[in-house]
Image (cartoon, rainbow, N blue to C red; front, side, top):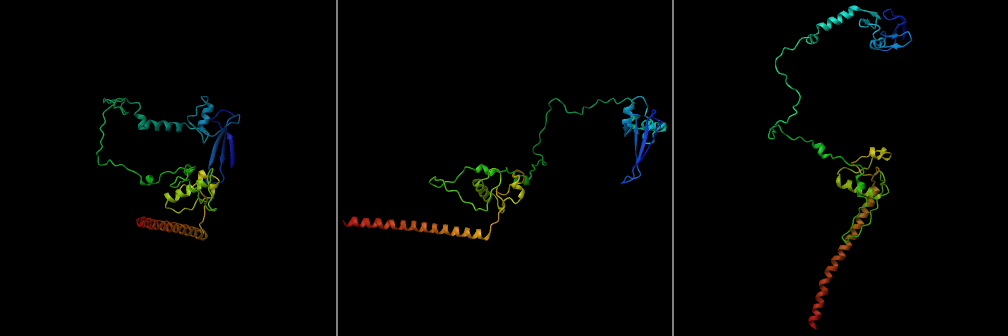
Length: 267
């Protein structure tokens, strides 16, 4: 930037005007004007200058950019204000004889007519908002401490989850993980993939996907499916054996009772 500092005769002795010309950028060639007091204080605008000088100097016709007193500019401003229609109406009295109307609401109670059968009265609802209810974070932890029982009120043994399933969240354990997976399978029709974001391990409260259970991302392999099929076949075979034994036991009971009756009759 190129700086030019010179005396300012329009201001008291010792005041200097500085003009800084810009040499680069989009505003190259334009200049900025500053004023310096005899003590070296810098002023960037006319309002700052007027507040500092106060009533000692009349700056009403002072042009900040040129540093000169310009009475013609003051006359033009007065003429413009004189011709302004808004200022012309300020000095004229209001000859309107109509009573003023109060525009604010009345402080007294007034009767109100309530229209309920108007054709435009329709209740609007957002179906998207109704369907997608907010989900509470880690709500599955409320299921901790609950256990299933059989018909004889005997507590059933807890299930053993595969080692590939690992829980996430504060105080995660096998009970919370099992409740989260079971709830997701019953309440959602979407695929269960776990928490796919790696950031969930650092801050689960921020990066947790509420549509997935509280477990890390996992992949079900063909080997896992084969082992599960073998378990199902084994359980079905045991169930079939138990049903056959029960049927044989029921079919043997009538023959025993008939033989007893025949023997007693012969006696």
